[in-house]
Image (cartoon, rainbow, N blue to C red; front, side, top):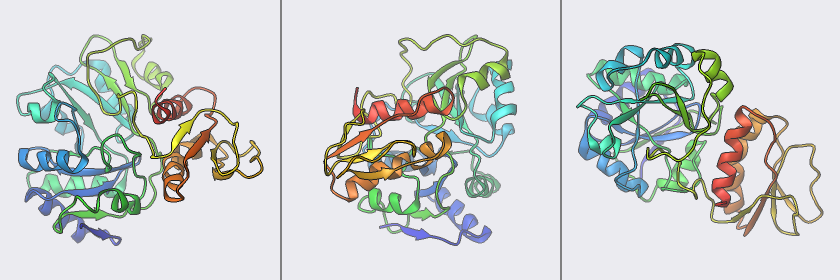
Length: 319
């Protein structure tokens, strides 16, 4: 079982960086969700991370880096529009898929010729990345700290509940509180002439178009494998239904202006789209912790972050 560390001082982050270098796994918060971190250059550590998550070997991971000057180590032929996106939205909830260099091995990319890079907008994560870079680290892979296909964790306690049976005593969970965004990063394919969104997130299509000056094409079929692209993903044990026809004893997730039917169990009633994203995964976990069998969800309407929320809900419901 890994240790949960609540007081993450500079000395703690330095120790955690050294543990990463030694091959241990470190779970840490980002602004999106908690990730389970491994040294991106340590194939053995990355393999154990895959084992802990029960993640398919051909499913790529995202390399988290400390700054813009680390991009060239991992990627080549970076287009100008991608540089604009980096300047506008990093640090932030955006992952860019770029043509990989040889150092980005198949064990990171799932055998694909692209590598995913991100700079998170979380002070604890950035502190860890900075300390890791100071001792020669080039990047940390950090997929969501949960078993594959399950609900992503947005608190350190959720990480412990999810992975405590699989982590070793030398591993750590760094407690940075609740993740402020709450859903995974936008993934943008930047390996071609124009950017393409492969997973929606807090960086919206409107924001990308404004940054790049390029009108985005609608996403069709793609052969590129990315995190969270399975039809069923982010799924609790309870059955998720997308409607408000709540029966007695069923859970309900909906905006605060939606009344709770008699006998239903209110799991979340956010007042804004941003709050909806922040509490969604915790509400799904709450349903499982309470032993509920069915969750009714009324997704938010609108563009921007609401698109990402609807994507996660539809995958949790497997529709």
